[in-house]
Length: 112
Image (cartoon, rainbow, N blue to C red; front, top):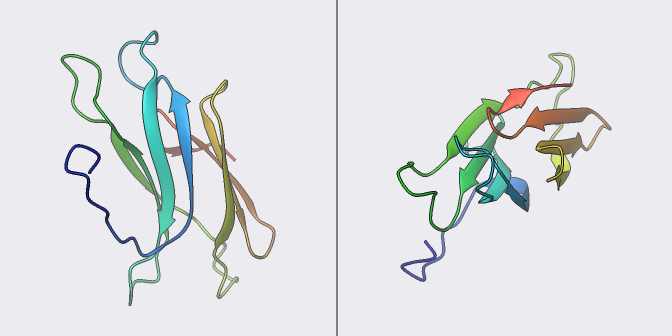
């Protein structure tokens, strides 16, 4: 939405910006926006990792989505803190009840 100078509302909890390589070229640094979202009426929380701005020449805009796997015995938990570590390509999410989730940004995989 940068090119159009528009905003967009998100049904989300936390977000962070990152500058890290996630495409086919490790020398190109992608500008990423990451956030956790839970749509109304949907019990599943998802983490979205998406490129903002212009992608590397010849590549499509980067976007990954993964489910945040809260333990089944925990009701009402939601993300409260998100932090990216650009050097290692990781995204950390901490929930209200103290659960830590670590995602690898290039693939959106849950690492821990």
